[in-house]
Image (tube, rainbow, N blue to C red; front, side, top):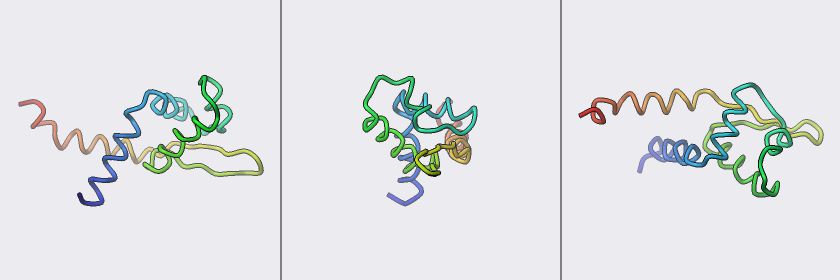
Length: 95
């Protein structure tokens, strides 16, 4: 598998989980701290952090730390990657 295909696999894998999709929806309104993002979810912070690591590794988010606060921001380029893949396969899907 080439590097581009592996990256696309990571992008779609990250979207496969409803928690991660909810995180991305929240970040669509702007950057947020880990605490703000974790608040609506009934899970341990360590479990929540695994979701953030998957999103970061797949390129959906970036994080930065300022003092004790880690802030997450969405990377909109990933939407273009998904859109390009879907658009490129649209004719095949519509047959």
